[in-house]
Amino acid sequence: MSLGALGLGAPQPVGFGERIWRINWGLVLVLSAIAGIGVLALYSAAGGRFEPWAARHGMRYGIALGLALVVALIHPKVWLALAWPIYIVSMLMLVAVDVIGKIGMGAQRWLVLGPLQIQPSEIAKVAVILLLARYYHGLSRDQAGRIFYTLPPLFIVLAPVGLVMIQPDLGTAMMVLMGGAALLFVAGVRIWMFLGAAVAAVGCLPFAWSFMHDYQRRRVLTFLDPDRDPLGAGYHITQSKIAIGSGGLLGKGFGKGTQSGLNFLPEKQTDFIFTTFVEEWGMIGACVLLGLFVLVLMWGFSIALRSQHHFGRLVALGVTSMMFLYVFINTSMVMGLLPVVGVPMPLVSHGGTALVSVMFACGLLMGVNVYRDAQLPLGR
Image (spheres, rainbow, N blue to C red):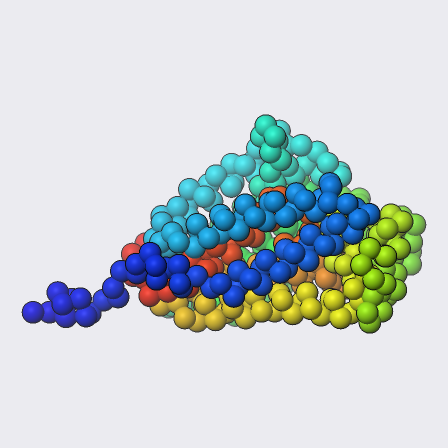
């Protein structure tokens, strides 16, 4: 009698109780702590009121957390099978945005579906991770390093990047591009291909500059010379630096921020929520919040290393890279280290689609841990 017949040669099915036990509840606790900080920051940004941001943020997080736990309990083979449909739907939604999307703050980024306002570009970030993980799951390491097999992933990444750029949303487009590049790197794409792409990108900069919108050019020029237009294009970042600097080590105290409280700080509930928080809680508060994100990233890498199937490894690394890019770009942006590109702070900034998509991605990450020893079929 074979080992397979005895059930000794293959992993045993994981029961429901064990699946619940395998959910990384420490990660759930850290994510909830980050979202709780978001509620506090949004409460303060509204002048000590739960409306219009803090209450919605808390309610949305509760719903998104439930979704993440459900996603974590679904077998990865389901997400392997749904990778193409999810990607295609996200692409159709991006096309719909460019045709009939709602215009707000100078950009056409939202679809209005009854009472819901959806930003498909946030969904596209997760869709690209799933499809790239599916594609490379079906390749050997040697195949992944060949240029012929790199062409389909390039299309998978560049198609949504192009559609997002049309909206225009430079920050999200860069996140999709860099997140896709990170997955290609860990999948085994050769270094010389990245170097070639970098040289080509530098060569295309003059053409890219000609296609950029006026406000995007002003943001880049303001980044290079912050004092050139302090009351215009440089106003956001100037006020953000003042708020962060005035917070000092311990901050001004909860609800006592002046730059945000007196409305000197634009978009204080979304892109600049980190500034709002640091002004009141100081460098200590910033270190606590960033420390929580570091824990999320460490758990993400740990889950990726423990996964016994390539699909789960790539999904975990893709989600971890996405979280890192969110935090890195947002914090660098509000401190003037990068141009202002409109990337929110995950689980802290106000915004329904971004919150749900991040928690859906975290559900996928936890699901990789739950089914870390699952056997998945190959295929692209």
